Length: 164
Image (cartoon, rainbow, N blue to C red; front, side):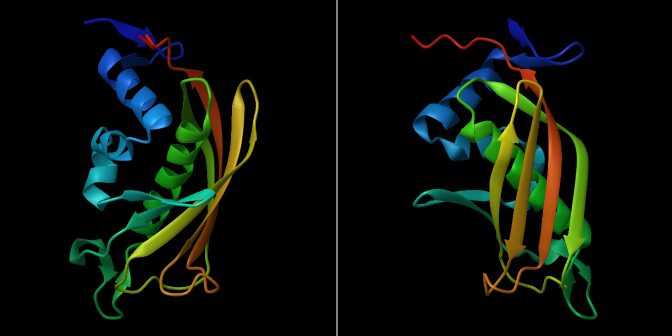
């Protein structure tokens, strides 16, 4: 099996490169989510909402971290924010490059209750080697965010994909 080089110590299989290409070009977001085990575990969905994409993590009892409140586990909220930023960076690129997180900061503004989480991620800047992205998570009311995150990614070449 051939694989495309992805940085000095990582490779991207041809199948993964094809999934990434199909998601970027054809909007096959389910195929992209299916390729990421943690995204599958969270039940992540990508919804095109006009000019922006929203990332949705449906509520599951397994996401609860504090049963007394009840409140979602903070790691679950952080995970959906990081995945949304990484996926937004992947999807928005014209070249197949993989964003590897190198710096992640999250501000928790309130407890996330037992409800679906929605995330909007925005790519602030993409250079040859680094991308900066931010994201906001909310539940029932877009005006009452649950958390805000920022991430810096090192952009690694994913290798060529045959367009034919």
